[in-house]
Length: 265
Image (cartoon, rainbow, N blue to C red; front, side, top):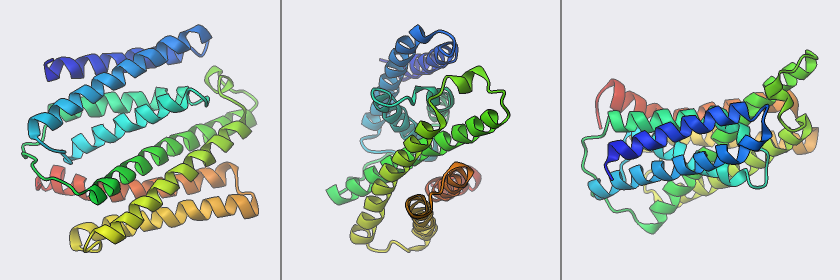
C-alpha cells in the first residue's frame, strides 16, 4: 500500500478516535468504538513506519521519524493499559500528537540511507530508552491531568471531563505506577549504555547522558519521597514534569538543534 495512503488513514483514524473519546464523556457506549479506531490507527501507523524502515534497509533515527516511532509506542502502551486501567482519556491529548508527528515524518523525510546494523546489546539499549521515554511521557500527561483535576475539585466546579475521570487517589496511584515502570526501563537504558557504549561521555553523547542521569535522580527521589514522606499532589506533579523535561531535552535537544536548526545529520 502507498505510504501516503497509510499515513492518511492513520491520521484520520486517530482524530476520529479523539472525537469519540470526547463525546464518550457523555456517552459511555462510544468508548469501545473509540479504542477500536485508535487500535486501527496505531496499526496503520506501524505499517507506515515498517514501510519506511524496509525502504531504507535499516532504522531511521532522524528527528521526526524518531518522534513518530516514540509516539506510536506511547499509543500502544496506552491502548494496552486501557484493558486494565482507566487511562483511555489520555488519548485525547496523546493521539493528536501521534497523528501530527506521523504527518510531519511523512512531510519531512530524512534523506539519509540507513544501513547500520546494531548489536543485540545496542538494540536492548535503544529499545529500553524508547520504552522509558514513552512511559514517562504518559506519566507527564497523567500528572498534568492530575493537576487539572485537583484544581477543579478544589474550585468545587469540576467540568464534565474531570467528572469522567477516576477518583483523585486512583489517578495518583496510577501516576506512580507509570513512573516506577518508566524508571525501571530508564535504569536498564543507562546501565546498558555504561556497559556497551565505549565512550558514553563523548561530545555528541555527553548532554544526553548527563540529562538522563539527572532525570533518573529526579524520578528516583520522587519515589523515595513518596514512600518516606508521603509526597503527593502538586509536589508529585512538579517533580514528574521536571524529570520529563530533562528527558525531553536529553532525547530530542541535540536532534532539534543539529537537524532542524543547523541542518546537520
